Length: 153
Image (cartoon, rainbow, N blue to C red; front, side, top):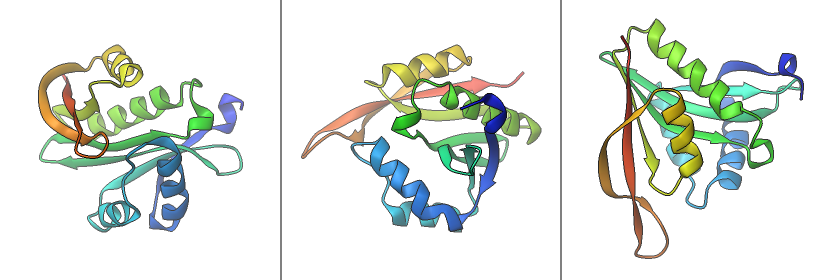
């Protein structure tokens, strides 16, 4: 897909079914559709990276409050991995946070998600701490999350 055919737009709840379908393909422990719906109801922004025909290639939910941006969820359609779409979307989210005068951008990432950790580190995020047992990881099992942050200067 040509770079010119890709754009980023704020998405509404009308795209919920499409978003959830990508979430189901993208994660072994996806958000429930109800969680996504409630996130929209709370007024949280959902940004989508869209292809030329308007298909969702990647999306992210970003919360901004009191000078703090928090990435709640990000997912690149598995069929679109390796094309730089996650990086492009994260750069957009960081620009949005700057425009909203945020001083810090926070996120959690699975300790085992080396690709995402490399992406975040390449964008200037550093590890701030650990949330023990934050992510489900099978029946009765969990995985730690690394809390990463980027401070705007």
